[in-house]
Amino acid sequence: MEFSRPLVRGILVRRYKRFLADVMLEDGGAVTAHCANPGAMLGLANPGMAVWLEPVEDPRRKLRYSWRLVELGGGRFAGIDTALPNRIVAEALAAGAIPDLAGYASVRPEVRYGTGSRVDFLLTAPDRDPAYVEVKNVHLRREGAWAEFPDCVTARGAKHLRELAEVAATGGRAVMLYVIQRDDCDAFRLAADLDPAYARAFAAAREAGVEAIAHATRITRTGIRLDRAVPVSGHQPGGR
Image (cartoon, rainbow, N blue to C red; front, top):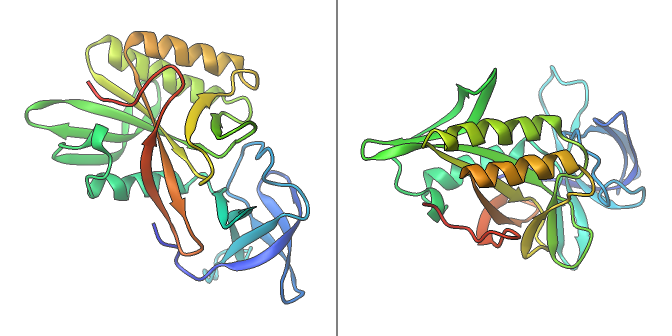
C-alpha cells in the first residue's frame, strides 16, 4: 500500500474530538489534519511527537491533510490510520503473501454476515470451505516488544468475535487477523485490562474454533506493507 502523495513532516500540537489534530509543519505553517482513528491512541498522540501527514487535493475535503504516521525513533514508525489495514491485507491476499490464507480462488470484501455486519473478507475456492476473515488494526505497545489490542473498549470488536464464533461453531472457517501497524513489535497479546469484555469474547471465540493470527508490517514514508507473521499469546499462527 503506497501513499498517494509524499508525506509532510510536522510536530503534533494536540489531538482533539478524536478525529482532529493540530500540527505545526516544519516550514512554520500550522494546519489541522484529519485523524482517521476513533481509538485512544495511547502513546501515539502526545504533544511534541513528530508526525507525518499526507496532503489531500480533493476539493470536497475541508481538511487539506490526513495524519498517517508517528515517528517512534530509530527510524521506526507507527501508522495511525485505522482504515489502512484492510487495504494492506487486500494487497497481501492478492499477492498470496499470507500463508495461512493462501490458496483461495476468490477474495470478496465487505460481505454481509452475522447480525447486520459485513465480514472484511470472504475467501472461497471450489475445493475448500469459505474463510471468513476479520481485520483489526493494532498500534498499542506498552511493554517490551508486545503489540496489544484493543487500546480502549470496543463493543464492535467483541461483536465481531461473537459472529466469527458462530461461523466456527457451524463448521466454517473463521479467522481474526491482527495487523500490527508499527514496526517495533515481535509478538501480539490482548490488552485485557483495557477491555475485559473483549478478552472474554476472544477466549470464547478461540474455544469455538476461531483462528487468531497476527502480522507485523513494514512502514516507510512512502507506504506500508504486510510483513511476517508473529506469535499470538497462547496461540501460534497456523490455519486448519
